[in-house]
Image (tube, rainbow, N blue to C red; front, side, top):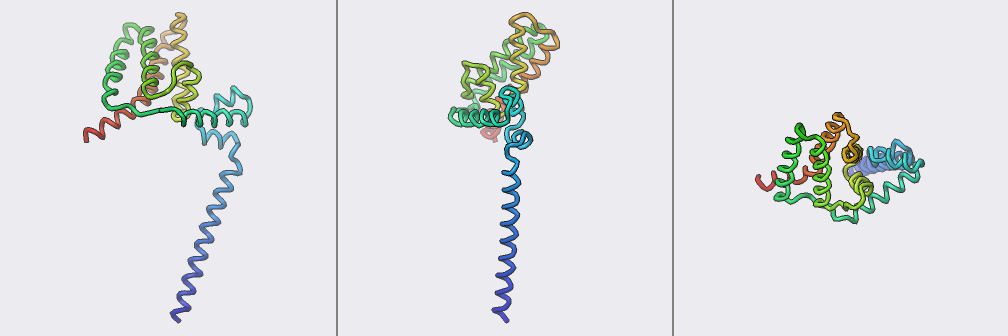
Length: 194
């Protein structure tokens, strides 16, 4: 009788193991079956997928470009802020924001420069704006469109073509980018204080 109970437990365990394996296989097949559809690529790469899709006009080329970006960024030395680096950038950002009312064009230009400096400190290469935008899209795809829009307005400021509403919009975009880039420093600072 005791042996019979042991056999029943082994059979039950085997059935549970088979069911778990079947579910895992089903999920794996389902995930990889539609891996290259626009929806699955958007899920994998986020909003950063739309720009390459427009640029390369092919899902396969857009995916290849995004995978190339991921490989490139893996080889960069992107780092979090050291806590002591956070305060000067935050003070400079507060100063830029406070001057926006009196001198919005200068504030937008300074915000663009500050974000570039911040990216440089974090390890993003600076020479080429498009490359910088592509690099940041790997880790922060939702911010990339804001960065492009804000930078475009900053370029319009230099040509004296930006409207007041565009200047306000640029500052909002730069603020979200600044907060995202500086966020790691703030959390590192809180950990040190605790």
